[in-house]
Image (cartoon, rainbow, N blue to C red):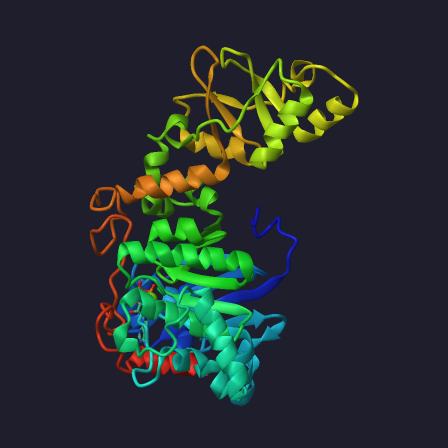
Length: 454
Ligand SMILES: Nc1ncnc2c1ncn2[C@@H]1O[C@H](COP(=O)(O)OP(=O)(O)OP(=O)(O)O)[C@@H](O)[C@H]1O
Ligand SMILES: [Mg+2]
């Protein structure tokens, strides 16, 4: 598990007590925060806006950390502090051991080129450049030779599923395709760290799902360290190894999706994930999968082994002819039995260390049972094996079920400024968000993107 406290992998990004206060004499904002004043009080009293307040967490090698929170909670401010598109008022950003806040202008530019790529919400493509020329952009400013950069650009177009589109102009592309180009551009420079601020938020739902899947698949092939911002809970659950939940500039919880769902640290988090509180109503039956091949007590160990091998399993549930659950058999144990010429699976089945739950078992409690990595058996009142549950299927089922919840805002946090279920958007960037069909003008975002990726 990629819990920050347990993981042995190395921290790529370390955020240490980051503050960003907007207004005159920002230091005073920090003093007032230290005196215990709230964001609102500080705004009223000192006309200072608390963007980010005392944020500390690490992002580990190969990890995707999703930062989420309501509009105005400080997500964009925070991510911009990481590559210093914004200067933090206080605190340190350490990337691979280098304190980014201490770099001078030239060092910062070099460091950005080497380490980061940033993908924004709007597509911010250059309209007069072809797709492949857009994708090459980062390499061009790095001074990479034309041939090499063309090859690398075409390669990343392939990675994002846009093979063959290189010679088109952005205007001929759909919103989803444009965002893929943006992603390809970010990937082409082969950055160590991808910073993604609502990168998929402007896409319509189906394309958005595609892009999420694409990024997950891509990340399996080329492990990136990613800081991913969204206000969408489904997206956060799907994409995040860990989730950082922000409120009023502060971090209120850092945890795996499971932890956020099952052990909300505060009432705020609880309300935030209330949409997913279908964990309370969902049962094992809702999330179970059909049992994959099972072994029968009268199978020989070799038969059981073959079933496992054919399905890529490292263990198998053992049942009687009636379907009644007997236990579990690991591949190791089966192989051992085969060597010893044991005759029946029955003789070697592990009957003790098997988790089985009834059909109406609450999903909420299933999480903890699944953490060992072993599947959990779901049985009916006659102990007949009806299904199995693995960790991944719980998250997937929750995510799906949660989508059906859109439109019901009863359980949204009280201070949610909008109403669409877990979609807590409300862009105040002043940037066109429905850029799907808009010709890609060089917006404010584009200028920023240029700076971020230059
Ligand atoms: N340039 C700025 N000047 C003054 N205040 C700012 C500036 N940028 C952001 N803020 C304020 O800082 C706080 C955090 O804003 P930020 O844009 O980081 O929120 P966000 O979580 O990204 O929200 P959204 O989901 O709407 O993108 C808000 O109160 C915002 O008004
Ligand atoms: Mg934002």
